[in-house]
Every structure is written in structure tokens, then in C-alpha cells.
Image 1 (cartoon, one colour):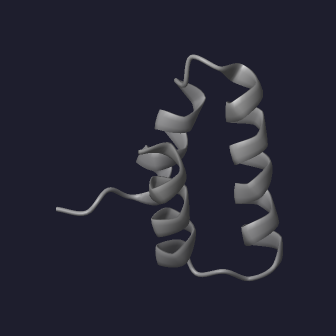
Image 2: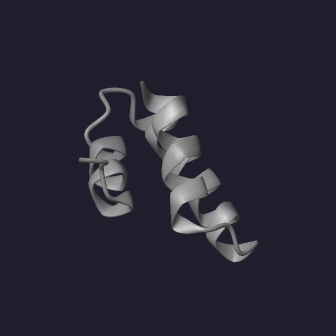
Image 3: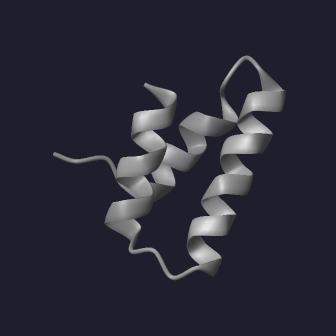
Length: 50
């Protein structure tokens, strides 16, 4: 079963490097503001953190 966007965002918050986590969360907000679909956001975030 694919991971939901909320689960992926929670995993970002658990990253050991908090500077990286802040940058990734900023990118997530950027995608939301620009109308990216949840699937697109989730796929991009998973590609960054895995």
C-alpha cells in the first residue's frame, strides 16, 4: 500500500539532520502553494528522503 503524504511528512520530521528536514519541509510548502497534486508531492518527497 502506498504511503500517504501525511506519513511521508512525519518521516521528514524524524530526520536526524534538522537543517535538511527544514529544507525539505520548505520544499513541501512550495509544492503546495504551486498546486502540485498530493501524489506528485509525495513522490518527490519520497525520492528526496529515501
